[in-house]
Length: 503
Image 1 (cartoon, helix red, strand yellow):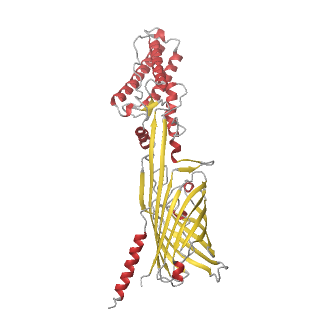
Image 2 (tube, one colour; image 1 turned 90 degrees about the horizontal axis):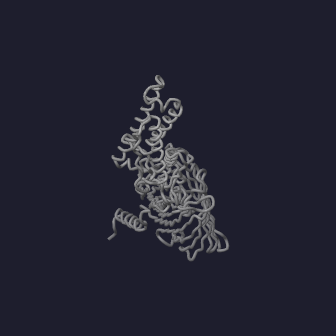
Image 3 (tube, rainbow, N blue to C red; image 1 turned 135 degrees about the vertical axis):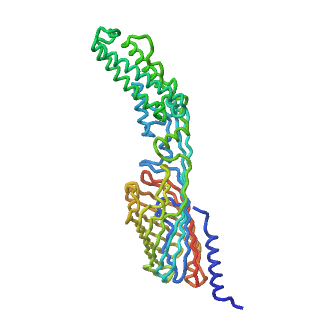
């Protein structure tokens, strides 16, 4: 008994869908720009009336960036024998305050630091193409993007740190002590000002012998001590202000210099006021120990408003593409001595559906480009005997920006050239090499090399030897050179294309 036509259609669709789902690899993210995968496209078009379900899984990993001369780890900017202003310019304000408070040169040192960082990007574009004719097909592509940066930050005392966490930020007693310092300086300044005012009107008054004739020096003392007190308040803080994140460690040379200056100011005030009583008896509270990874993390988050140094991950949809593919030329080989040739052009519009938000300063965790982009490609495939060569050229450019991010930090256009020679072991199986050159208008370029294996039964379908074709392509790529700042990455790509028809 024959099955009804609707049952046969549903059966074919179910089998095709099941096969496609079984062919999908685990969830994965993209390496650089969405249009920059490369080495995954060829000159084939979808036969008329067929659908082609297409997925590309690209696993990318990198822990280094290219420099003008070689490469360096991602965490190099926070790796140093003596972590200080050179690695973190924002520390310059603290270093300047310590220099002013000690009245001597000071080079800030948080200790020996190391940042290990590894970025992983996985990208799965799920594409569906339909053959309007044997030459022309239309497509839609929805990418799933997962990006992750794993970091481990360490800091120790090997480098001889001379600063530590400010205790006034966590101890009310320390903050009260620092407040008392400000009160003592204010009281001493007020007493000397009152003495100068009194002696200006009556030089013979009691206590004036110590200031008469020394008024200029007394005014200089008031000015210098007021500036010192303001510097100490800004550096160490008090009950009203938190102060800086890091201050000199107890008994360090800088801490001793600050205490010495307090003692010197005290001696001068006693001399001008003619008293044996100490007016400045308290010194600011120094750090009890060195800076740890947790304290430095708090500084980055709270004081600098920066991003976390911890492991971060983002998962979501990238920029959706809608496009077409047209086979402009095809020459069949009459004999094995004559080459076969196929030329295909394609173009797509990429929509800004992926988020541009990135929560890491170490690696780009944005899921999309944030702009409308037009992407155009040309693919030329030539084969003679067992030898074949696929060459592809791509140009993409922004035509409309959807956010306000400065264009100097983004690609405005990019070009890519791919060459992939292959050797057919049999009709469906082929080994291929891969070379890509990529260049961007603003962020530099790089070169990739690699290789892989291809399996395709499309030619058997075109010769009517099978009912529906299946194609798979695996490629391993490595960035062998690049402009400064470009990631030195390794990428494994797996493309699976399943053909089916609805009727």
